[in-house]
Length: 477
Ligand SMILES: *[C@@H]1O[C@H](CO)[C@@H](O)[C@H](O)[C@H]1NC(C)=O
Ligand SMILES: *[C@@H]1O[C@H](CO)[C@@H](O)[C@H](O)[C@H]1NC(C)=O
Ligand SMILES: *[C@@H]1O[C@H](CO)[C@@H](O)[C@H](O)[C@H]1NC(C)=O
Ligand SMILES: *[C@@H]1O[C@H](CO)[C@@H](O)[C@H](O)[C@H]1NC(C)=O
Ligand SMILES: *[C@@H]1O[C@H](CO)[C@@H](O)[C@H](O)[C@H]1NC(C)=O
Ligand SMILES: *[C@@H]1O[C@H](CO)[C@@H](O)[C@H](O)[C@H]1NC(C)=O
Ligand SMILES: *[C@@H]1O[C@H](CO)[C@@H](O)[C@H](O)[C@H]1NC(C)=O
Ligand SMILES: *[C@@H]1O[C@H](CO)[C@@H](O)[C@H](O)[C@H]1NC(C)=O
Ligand SMILES: [Zn+2]
Image 1 (cartoon, protein in one colour):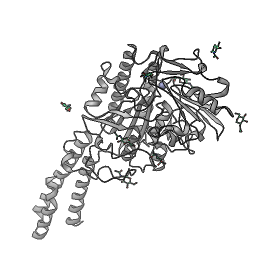
Image 2 (cartoon, protein in one colour):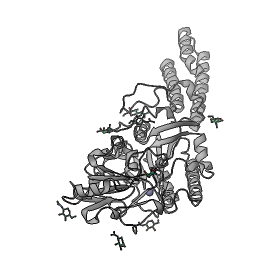
Image 3 (tube, helix red, strand yellow):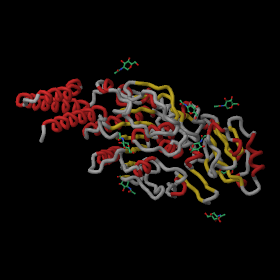
């Protein structure tokens, strides 16, 4: 072995190792968590120390405009596709598709028909097509076969499986021999309690505290598995919740004969399918029926909702004002809390926090669209986004490498670390950073010892000169 190539390769190896560890802590890993119905301001209702810890060391978006209708399935699918409901096809929790002549119902867990989901491709599939692996613990739709695929690892939906068991699976998948780079975790609360007692009830306090404990548990388990410093954790939700009251009920039976239409979805956005030849009668009967009910013919639905161009949106759509409840008959089921209303209403907005190596610390952003999460996820996972309605540019400032770049509207594949300056690296007080520095230093020391030994033994002045040059940048690193 001649001294020169030996030295050069050593120097290169040292440089590569230290920059790799420093600038690229790890393959980006992402864990996306949804606490169903966690309204943006629940954080401040009772002490939530774990949420506040994430806030302090991560990024926070105060107002997230989700998609209309502000229901569970439409919004969870928007989070993982970046599409409006009319574009991804999951337009409600309860749907009827007149072309397929098929129904979909969350209430009856009749949600497993692939055709309802295949107007879009969720991110776990795109991630897998790019050669990565995904793992899903109860996230809505992840146990449905979509375009012939399931997540690499997933749990069949079962509400009775504890949060702790779901977390255990996520940790197992992140630490397995073929580890996932993308995990999805879902929990049913505080939505369930929000519906039954109403968000203004003091009974919400203990539920929010309990979720804070659950977040604490998740953080503890991530730390135990040595994942806390290299997983990008995003905590969000599908929607908020508003207080309802028996004083604010709109009873359809008072205005229109129930034999003249089918009520596909009920409240607060009634999806009305008139019987053959009954369209005008039903529409006329409802149009001016109640001051807190706005009734639209399908083609008149406001563009701002992006809720029109889909066969599963019914010919008549009646939208209740905030806090008003649509019932066919007063004796039907009534809930003290509900959501689904106009997505411009703050009470419909979910929480959004992000923590991890990719995110800035202790920053608050005023607003984003929930469709922007999708291109952000694609960027973190280093996959090419499918066509979507979000904007990476609008959320890029949540990231550490936030130097403005010209990024086309839907392009999401910019290498994550290309704009990192060595200076920024020093502020990153993460575990991989210290490993990088330590390894780098050890290699530099070993290299110097070998170099000095070589100098002592070498009698060739020209070579000595060259080696000093090679060593220079290393000693400054
Ligand atoms: C739609 O499906 C129902 C059964 O679910 C059937 O009775 C009806 O005939 C079907 N309609 C058409 C047009 O195929
Ligand atoms: C759902 O989970 C519970 C708790 O783990 C378990 O006892 C039950 O058997 C599961 N149900 C189904 C259908 O798998
Ligand atoms: C309900 O309608 C009344 C009468 O138009 C209006 O004053 C009130 O603001 C409406 N309620 C809501 C929540 O919009
Ligand atoms: C509402 O339901 C009750 C109980 O099922 C029934 O007695 C009543 O006739 C219904 N009202 C209308 C207008 O259909
Ligand atoms: C977070 O930022 C605020 C100002 O925006 C500052 O007062 C606070 O000290 C910061 N906290 C940490 C932990 O850096
Ligand atoms: C949300 O999207 C709309 C258009 O799609 C855009 O005008 C608006 O600025 C976006 N909001 C934020 C906070 O980025
Ligand atoms: C991103 O993916 C491309 C291939 O699609 C690969 O060449 C590149 O190394 C990846 N970047 C990172 C940071 O993993
Ligand atoms: C949303 O994205 C889809 C897919 O790219 C596109 O077809 C649709 O026109 C977009 N909607 C709007 C309002 O831009
Ligand atoms: Zn709900």
